[in-house]
Length: 242
Image (tube, rainbow, N blue to C red; front, side, top):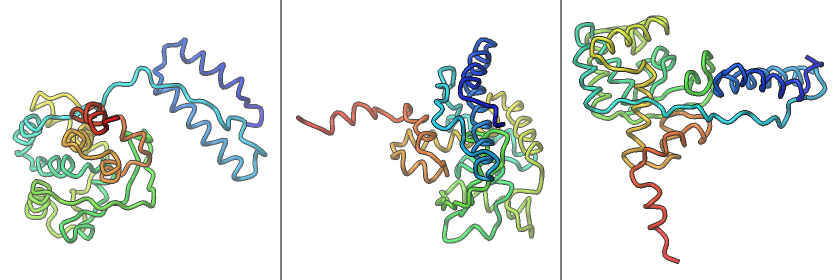
């Protein structure tokens, strides 16, 4: 590790680019390396982080987050009733829960019309990781979320402490994929979270509020959805008269 230098990292980045690796992939690889080096400095294995201040590649090949329309969600629910999973999908779409969060949330977290969740970063911020942040967020429960909770309590979880039936993360993703195929819809389980965030933005909610409801660690993550806001540029300019 003490032989890694910024120049080598730039060379590696160029080789990966020439190999047609996606910008997001290269960025994640460099972030992982940078995190390891920072930890080495913290543990006094290295005196300094040689990549401190390193500029990460821009995500020029990134795609806008995929989300479902209200009509598509209702179509998905109708094709998921046979196994009761429509209530899980409806809960996740109306609260923005990540996969790990949905599988870990308890009935004790429901009180006063809100769902209190410890943010567990995965998928949209730290792919293939499950990191508890120690940060809690409180999500108000709308009518559909309350209906989903009542259905889960009466039909799927019973006396269990968990809101969502016990299963592994891959099993939950596969269950969603099966329902999506039946409904002939694209996307994956994470599209439910994207739908929650996207519809908040399209409803004109400010990005700081959306960030807190979604449990994003950085406002930069939330700004990926800013283009969905109706007339957000026009309204900004209309607000001034110089």
